[in-house]
Structures are given as C-alpha cells and as structure tokens.
Image (cartoon, rainbow, N blue to C red; front, side, top):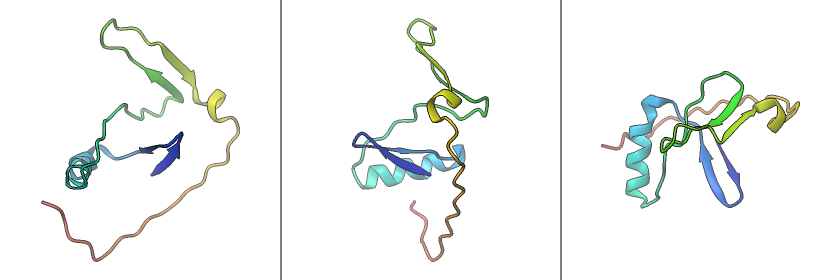
Length: 83
C-alpha cells in the first residue's frame, strides 16, 4: 500500500518484504527509510531514540476521522525475483 503526501511517497510493507524493497530502491537509486511499525493499537507514535521521549502520540481517529476503509487487492504474476 502506498500514498503520496506533500510530494513524498509513503508505503506500508510487511516486514518480510523490506529486503526486496531495499534492493529495488538501490537498483532505481531511490533512497528510503523504515520509519515505523504498524502495531494495530490505533495510535501514531514517534519515538525519539536520543532522549526516550514520544514527541508525537496521536490517536489515529483524530487524524483520520471517520474515513471509510478502502480495501484493495493487488495480484501480480509473471514477474522475476530480483536477486
């Protein structure tokens, strides 16, 4: 899943797909960073490793409101694995 916000791309990846995504980004010379983990607790939390604080700790309901869920399915076939 991905979205475009303020000129920057965002993507949500399963942990097991990060390595292949990293290889794809290297091949295309596109920088990326893993900035968080989806925990399912309903909060967006930014943890600052330098001092242990959480400068951002927002309930997703306040951010997203009552947005309807938009399920999507992507089926891909005929692709070769990148090694």
